[in-house]
Length: 155
Image (cartoon, rainbow, N blue to C red; front, side):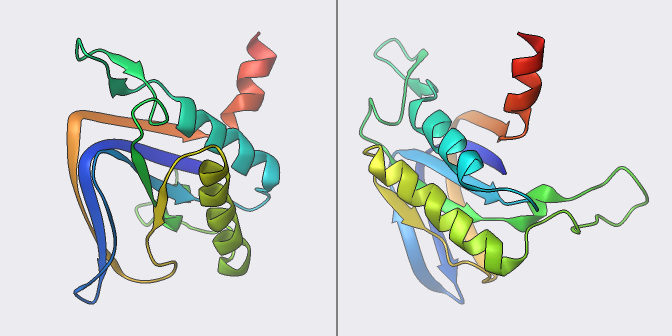
């Protein structure tokens, strides 16, 4: 499972001109589920996102989490995060989880954030969404749940 986190002063999602969700200060999290992802990936990333210290403190240093600042998270499913681009010019999405698997994982990710105390809003799974955001900083972080296995081997 891969996420792109953007610290935002505000973000919103619209489908066919209709606003689906919006947040003020917090995080826009684009979520891509890959084949083989499961509950462990969801829990790992939800805990990491909720506690990642990328929000500014009084000195404008990245020293607080979205939990510390009572910010919200806007979760938007984005299968294109799983694109394979090493070969050729057209991205391959064969590694992305099928919608019937991906949608529950994205919902579980949001629910796990909510269980940690983070207010969560959602984009519309499978829809052509217009995502608007004001990236504050700018701060953009990419996390991949599969990287945690690599980090354990290095330690």
